[in-house]
Image (tube, rainbow, N blue to C red; front, side, top):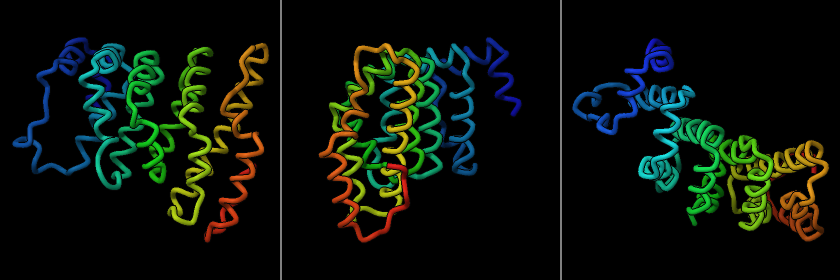
Length: 227
């Protein structure tokens, strides 16, 4: 789209877009298709323009507005969730320190992540958090934080007959991703003095035993997941 190429090349357009007085006007957009402007907004915010990344990633009030989507009650709209996940992904990658610090301050973040794990875009957000942090020590800190939040045990708990099929599938896939990413990280940083806490938790007999127990009581037959 023309606006995206202009966004990347025009300093004046960038200045306009990061100006805080640029707000949603219901009188202008009320007759336009509902998802058109969220889609365009997402493309602009993820166009990887440094000025836009800085304006969003360094302004906690804007981050709180963005984060508010995850706090929405009820089931998330899958398309809007994909826009949210994509924006969070570019911020995790480009403004890593700020976003990780922001998320760690949110006591409800992991709870919300797991609550909405049946929405594939939110499962993707967890994967982005595990993969888009490039600095090795900060990535290890993220793994340790998620381990302290007992995300492995809680994902295993999602593989239960009381949960729906999407939660089963995405929780199982998330656990497989954690195993794969943890092993890849071990290969990449073999000299690290600190073990991967997520993988260590998964490999504990108590988690393996609980996983088998959850599967045995579930009414759904789960696909093979490489455990």
